[in-house]
Amino acid sequence: MAASHPTIGPRVLVMSRAILKMLRPPPGEFDYVCLDDHADRDRYLAEHGAGITAIIAAGMERLDAARLAMLPDLQLIAVVAAGMAGIDLDAARARGIAVCNAGGINAGDVAEYAVTMMLAHRRDLMANDAYVRSGRWAEARLPPGHAVSAQRVGIVGLGHIGRNIAQRLHPFGCEIRWWGPNPKPVSWQRIESLEALADWATTLLVAVAGTDDTRGLISADVLDRLGADGLIVNVSRGFVIDEPAMIASLRDGRLGGAALDVFDGEPIDGAGWVGVPNVLMAPHVAGATIESLAAVMRGALDNVRRHFAGEPLERRVV
Image 1 (cartoon, rainbow, N blue to C red):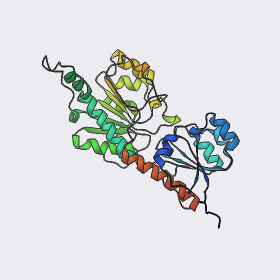
Image 2: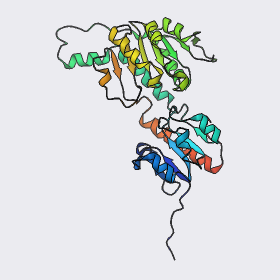
Image 3: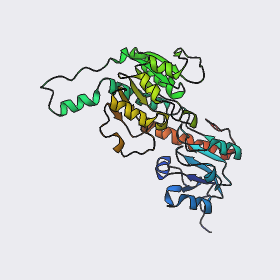
Image 4: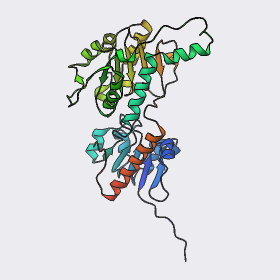
């Protein structure tokens, strides 16, 4: 009798080796193809894209109309994050390609990190650590930081992440207000404009969705309104802030400080930030906890299974 072989299911394109490693898919369920394994990715897709029916992506990779055209049988894009800046959603919609993302799966973790960065910056955590390590404690004390409870916190975008930020900051006693394009039935006061929110706030936390509509939303004018004692915290996308304007404002002292988990054109080499004062930086890790990574990977794989089983998708956006 011939040996039996596992049945290989539909072809699923995984956009990176990092995603495939964290996905840990069971063998034989789907025929996985990793795009990182091919030096010329577009050439590979042009020659072998037919038959690929689903993609698991991080959301920032290029999936524009030209690349989607190389995938004539594509039916689903399952994103392991909330952001989808690399995906042409209009092209997907026109093709009838379903798109789903992580939604609020890791919103609590992102919010937790945003609050952590705010606390660390306002209480000068990194400076105090360096002060002790340098042996200067015996000489004098550093100037005191700001009380978190005294902060007027403005949240830009009150989606899954923004709400989680507000909920976590409420016990600290901060005054919390927010701005977004649409009113929502929440207890925190909505300010009529982003500019007015920046005028009022001492700390501005940016949590809007990273889309073409929000590119450059935090302008030089908004940063100037936040002012010389103001702190901006960004866990959205780097391009939501006018980055050159922010760097100039920090160098000139027109903006008090920045705590940034995201940057325009990631990954950055840091060269453009040498000598920029009062900045706390992280390499886009706010949503990356052991628990949340496992959860978003399960969520994406579950949606692939749902799609091929003819079941409704979770967190569908297209």
